[in-house]
Length: 338
Image (cartoon, rainbow, N blue to C red; front, side, top):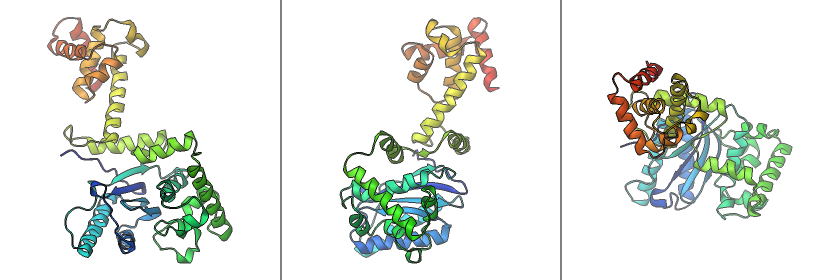
């Protein structure tokens, strides 16, 4: 069965979230919530993880964690498996508790600005869900997030919770004044949410957290693509699925498309001016069909070939080419991958 790739490296940072099976609750009461935090504490000891923020919602949880060693997969398997066993034992149940595999958003560990962005998204989940009012007392009363620990004295925090990275990114210190400033910042953000005044940019950023698979700039994207390539190479097509795989394959196809066009002496802006069955277009279409998994519809649009049926017919013609002009262009593009 196809599965999501798990990208791991020393020092990786993730926003991890997991939901209850069929959307059902994963916590029946505070004893369950405390049990998950106890399991998370044990997981941090076993793995060396640092937790930068967390929140426990009725049917899911969020954790912003840093893995100094490349061990997210093993750590999450232990965390969710152990909690499920203890939950089932306590409630005399059996079977799955969580819905499929957890989701992990890979975050650029070198971009300090992303830490308060993601931690704020996590800390304000109860406000967005309507569980607490957007005010200081309401936020403080919600026990099942790391926010109360952020606002309290460091001696009352668990060893595995690290607040320094988030506070430093906001130019704050772990002092009384710094914690009060952080409280003002969080309350201000909560009130913006309650008033529907998040702004277009913040909505875009939070959408990237909810639906994306990586968070970072171009340099991080390139780094992740190299890592993803190492995971996918040698695996059969279809072994992995997910937005990261689709993005990687499309980006790889775009690179091969540029190389193929260069091999036949064409620029992208020339493509709409040429006939749909130009032999150079056909040769480039053949190249991409043989060495990528992009669909005919994508190729027909990228090469201005009209209906996607033209792509299939063109690839067939290039396959059969032997001595004519089409064979010459086929040989030219073949050198791209030789």
